[in-house]
Image (cartoon, rainbow, N blue to C red):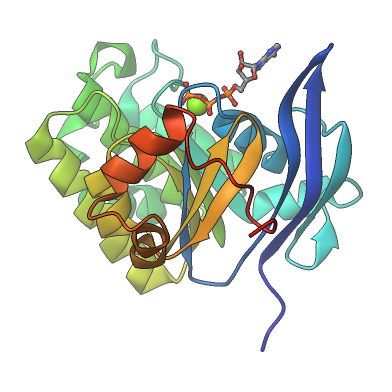
Length: 250
Ligand SMILES: Nc1ncnc2c1ncn2[C@@H]1O[C@H](COP(=O)(O)OP(=O)(O)OP(=O)(O)O)[C@@H](O)[C@H]1O
Ligand SMILES: [Mg+2]
């Protein structure tokens, strides 16, 4: 078995007196899509921000591509990318300017053709000359995803990529992510509050609650362990405070 692409051991993040992430451990295999689930405030974005090196962990260890994130940050981040519904590209630039800037930042040699190909794949070629800040939520999501796949990342973090999109666009974005992932073999960590999204996109799911891992497994295993027909039902039970046995204590 090859070593995991990502290993997180006993990750903790304290904001002052408040412990937002409390001893989280997991591994991500190559080509896997892992869903990070949990109620508002569970610690999902905080975990992602630590994986991106945007904030430092209070304790614990993150290894990506077999190296410590702390000591090999720059090399590791070159092989990663992210997209979030809550961060946007500079609004005053045209879409094609934004993508060109990022492609150059990633050091892509054939950046013109890479930008063109990626725009076509994500169906945003017609938006090339639009002002980024004027895009609708669905258009901006696709442009963000386009940016996220530009450097052909081996590890991609997607924080609520389908938030605030209409069901038609959600379905298209989901299919795009899944198809692009299958072709490129990119490993993905994915958060969403849409349980259908999670079931259709993710190979495995990690449930967080108050910064701790409550359950980890395939969507089917998680449903079976709660004797539940849907992930939505599992989610509601966890969010309302029942069934809070910590994974590993089982
Ligand atoms: N910079 C910060 N300073 C203080 N507290 C913070 C900070 N960032 C996050 N928190 C707190 O940490 C907890 C986890 O936040 P986080 O954003 O990781 O949750 P989340 O699981 O992503 O929630 P959501 O589903 O709402 O996006 C929350 O209680 C939040 O208020
Ligand atoms: Mg969040």
